[in-house]
Amino acid sequence: MTSNGMILKRRKPPKSMHSRNEIAARRGFSKNAIRWNNLTPSQVKAFDAYAANHPASILSPSSKPTTGRAAFLRLRVPTGPDYDPFVEVLPPTVQTLPIHTIIDNVFEGGPYWLFTFTDMPATSNMVQSLWVARFQSRTETHKPQRWIPIDTVLYAGADSNFYDHFTAARVELVAGEHIALKYVLRAPDHWPSQARTFWITVQERIHTLLKCDDDNAFSHVVDNTFQHNATLVDPTGSDHTQDHSVPGHIGTALYLDGVDDSIIISAAKHYPVMAAGTDFTIALWWKCDNPNPATTLHFLSNYLNTSEGLLFYTQTDLFKTAARVPDGGGVKTYAVEWPGAVDNDWHHWAFKRKGTAWTFYKDGVPSATDDDPLNSQALADAARVLAIGSKYNTGNYAPGTADEFRLYDYALSDQQIAALAAM
Image 1 (cartoon, rainbow, N blue to C red):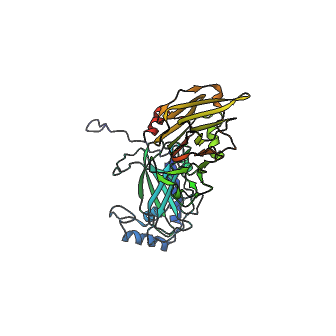
Image 2 (image 1 turned 135 degrees about the horizontal axis):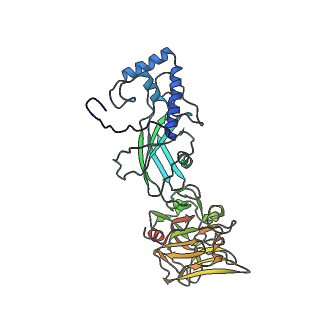
Image 3 (image 1 turned 90 degrees about the vertical axis):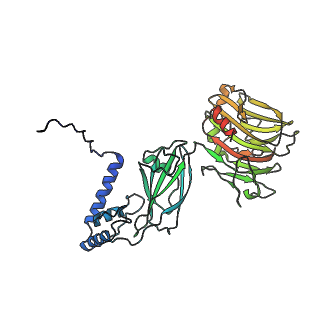
């Protein structure tokens, strides 16, 4: 109530500022304020003089005057357990060069691989600060409104898998989410760099992804998650991927001659996914090359006919698939013969296990589903490799071209498998 009557005003929002990020920011400003108070009078004058001569540029987006204390606080970076705090007591004369390029492979559930490149010579104590803005428009002209701080880490020699840094900041990215990443570099005796922003899309969760686009002078077949690389084996020829690289269904692919070539995925890298009681999906694009219909030729196999295993093969001019597990004193087999003669076209092959149900797929079309309590047993052996192009590298070599091998540690839906076959 006033002398002029009643006035209604909107209640002011509380200023508690007790979120995790606000508390951390307040703690950082307190530490930097203590450092400012520890400067000598001549050092304070140096920052005051710098601020007076540089009202804009690095310190402010406008020409509004600033103070030496504000300049000093803008110079600071968050402290961390992995590097020593910067101790500059005089204003730097040059600015840190920004990150100009990133190479990213970010998957739901991890890993979050972020490789960054700058023209700034790396020093032992240069640090990189990272922020993320979530659920962004795919139009990169859109300016993110809310940045979530992830971490400040040493730039040189830092682990490029940032998954643990994101989860520590309580950020879990989801497949298909378009995000913006903001980087700032800070070298000792330099002003922080101008921020650089990059946009990426989070990929679906996957255990192993061999895109087979390798074209190099070594035998590594790179897994895009950088965790489960495979090896190209060619005992009587070249095991360099550049000598096997050919046009693929998607990009390039790797050709196997059917004599002694294989792509080997070690037992340690596939067995945990295909062990007893797990749901999983395995998929591959394969293009046959003059197969011999009188011989069983394995183009994806860890199969042993007396125990467990999974097999995609050609025989008697037919495409066939089979899964096998022990059954008391014998073995139980679920086999599918696919209609149509073996041809030289690209075909997409997949198998999934969900609970006790097995289903094979050719070009996105499912077979009948086999459901049996025995089906929850391991479909791999802890000592036996999984091979593309042979019977776990012991024979039955298949001539053909492999592309886009995928191993998921969960069962895809029929629609998801059909979408892979439509790529």
